[in-house]
Image (cartoon, rainbow, N blue to C red; front, top):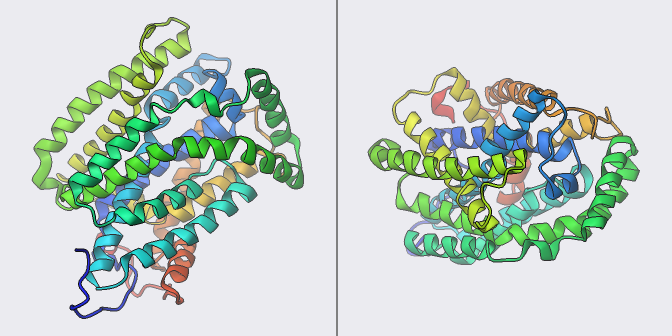
Length: 407
């Protein structure tokens, strides 16, 4: 059981600095870099419909190389890692709240309902390139399963992921003619429209396309979160140094499998030479981004098991600790760059300069996150999230300056 009513009930409070696992914050920080670059190059720069219908690349070999690298190394891989890490976080919270003798399910429901409010505001008011709403819904669906052992969580997660590759993706899409019309309209409107114009268009686009898309990817996302909970419960993440051989096997095996599948996929899409004729596309999907995401996580954990985090990794961990704030800031900045109420560069900026912009945004966030956490315990939106979840205003300022032990 996760909690016992015969034990003393300890005060429910947020995770303290000494209780954090820096490896998880580092993983989250790197995953957020991938999410930022994919969102910038793939979803803000051009219409979502263009990206779904074809492998889109801009004129010039540099842009083409960037498109291929983002598609091959990051697209679907970063968000897969991010989803898995969300499940790991649920596992950590479940363990800690239960150890204090509190109502774990009630705590998680409050936490995910607050996240749902954040997600819906982000989805409709800032950008429908959103994962928060989906994560909140998946989190609520996770609550009934929090007491399952690691093996049951893993089995259920694999089952849901397998189910996601059976569901017919084409059934949720509009016709090709409608997508072409919608894509041209979206690119033009996002580049030139005022904020009210874009708000009205996003409302219609979200209800008719984004919500069905979120429903389609829900089983896969929920499955990844269950696997994240199972990984935490199995004890691999708490002491990665004790599991170096396992991590190395995962890096080599999953990396080779995902690398070969991704290479075939991207080369076929970008060159026009069909090297994968006869292979089910969803089978190739399953063999590409999930193994690569797993290999990325294992490689980072293996690396971290050999080193003491220096200033650079401490900054990445700080960014990961403020993942919600940084994710929302990324969306706001990208919307101001690409949408009509800002610079209006949607459909006008190539992949290469967009990638550079993304790296610049990430660099600024690295510096800002560490500077912020030198004085405050949480990011601004993390503070709001925690205060609403715990039902009381959380202390914000920290007494100690930021160091490795503070994450």
